[in-house]
Length: 224
View 1: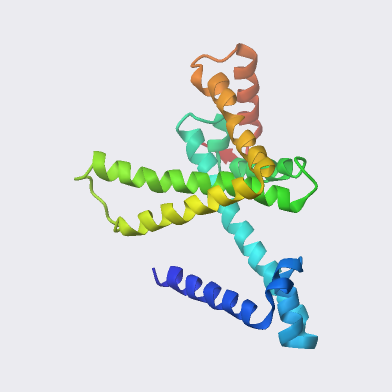
View 2: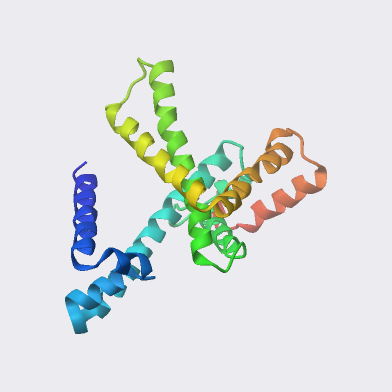
């Protein structure tokens, strides 16, 4: 809780500082607001800001890889993704195939467009849609299993505020960049036929089964 409050306060103060130092036109026109802010405030030491942004990006990417790969790992354990993704490294006890798959999937998204903003808009709509659905599921679980043991019980005010805020984050990009949002939603919906073909069907064709087995056996440094 403390870390969430601290991050919220820091980001709020940072945005206030931006609008105190920069004019509204500068914020709208500049492709890198943080760099322009650093040039005006720090002068010769403005190079510090790009370094901080790079470190922040690396940290964010590291966290995303850790969480996303575990989602694939758990889905594979539940039989919702190929079995090869549920393997873990014997030495480090990490889901190496799932991590590699996450990285390859991220690289694949780069082929959707050469425009970074298109990729950001497309990915953020689907990401926040998933976050919102997870928060809504909390209400469903509270109603369906009211007496279930909960070591950590969150007050429903928090997910309510989250759902309201995330709804704006989903709707506004769809209104502002409908094509970009459609690309992201299209990529997400493309998983439906794949799920039906490979997961919904209990018995896969023999060739597919053999191929999946070969993938599993190739990971000799991993175990299920």
